[in-house]
Image (cartoon, rainbow, N blue to C red; front, side, top):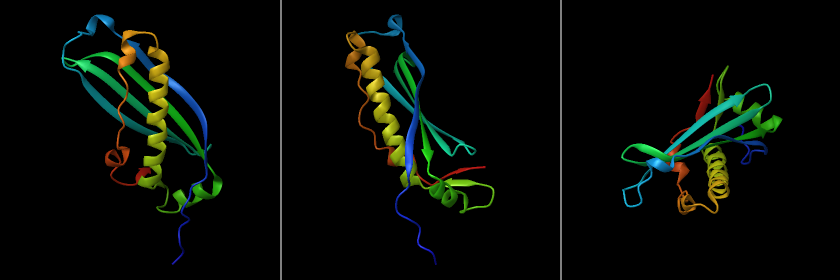
Length: 144
């Protein structure tokens, strides 16, 4: 049996702020705050890109007062992409450990963008906490 290689070659090719909003009138100084987290994945087969979309909504009474979504697009080297496409016919299967790594990079990038966009405002106190993204990605990610 052929041993799979342990590392994946990749490059961060693009970062985009997909959404950003502060809704000041929805914020109450002493109300309980909830943070909703969402990760979404996409690929571009022709360019060997994997996109990670990190969405965070700070809410009070189920109404968002601070929202940010950032996408990070990673180009995978040719050998690794071939390995991802050899697992199942007509599918791209990306190992959960590698997807967790890309998600961690994306969440960290989102954290930095949030800080920059809120710097000097009262909303700068809302920092994305450390998140165990490995617990969010429970299995390999498959694309048709």
